[in-house]
Image (cartoon, rainbow, N blue to C red):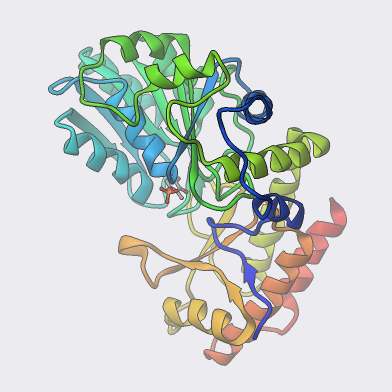
Length: 378
Ligand SMILES: *Cc1c(COP(=O)(O)O)cnc(C)c1O
């Protein structure tokens, strides 16, 4: 019996107003009542995506929407480019290879960001590349890629740009249309403050030409079916009714606050988290730290996994450790969605105690004090 604090980069805590919607009796989806909610949610998503393009919803985790962005845009044997800087960038490569797409990979060391110039050079060297896949906030390392610059590069070619914004959307500034992002992929359980199980894609007119020409096998993920149903405010298959109703409430909360203020708050929390880590003697990890999660290197002599385990067991606080090659080497502290200033301070207070228990020398209160300083200034 311990109060639980979810400070992981997905899933994230759900506001009580949103959770209550999930508890309501189910309604039927082929009704005027549901269609009105669905239409409202579709409009709200356009605001959060900052796009005029259609946004499609599917009942899956974010990876389902990633898969839909492969099968709807390409044919077997065609070429794609992946610009990867971490675990989620590598997921694009695995997906494309599973479908027999010829894949060129530009990958940088984890913790670094992808280079727009390298993408420009790769597109120039191989004009047969049809789609460029990359990641907005690479959650596995905690860095942000320069999507505006990458968008400019890809927009100047006939290729389309697909961006995995599963953790960044609704946390860090992302301007889909202004930055020329053809397809933005996202999911429900991060910045959007919902339970896992809903995934989203926005699709540009430029990408739509590819959708019509693509020959990879697709059925459940077929965006053509989704577009057709959208015209009558429906989905091709049973939608995740409960999640969509709760999403309406989450969008209402985001609209009430204003998306710019959501970005600003995440940015302040990120600054506070970075200051807190440094005050505890932890070196920040990653070149261009993102605003939805803060990564720091585990101090020498301490086992990263133990920090995560002790925080959960002793204080009910969940943060994330490293993935893949970074397992045990970094910790990741999320500050997106419904995670607020007070949660951050609680997290840092307990992190200090855990570090002290594990033998890392900390001045007690130093992390909290550094974070407070930033919060007071903003
Ligand atoms: C969480 C995450 C995913 C995976 O999404 P699932 O919902 O687990 O399928 C993919 N990409 C990024 C950047 C993520 O943060």
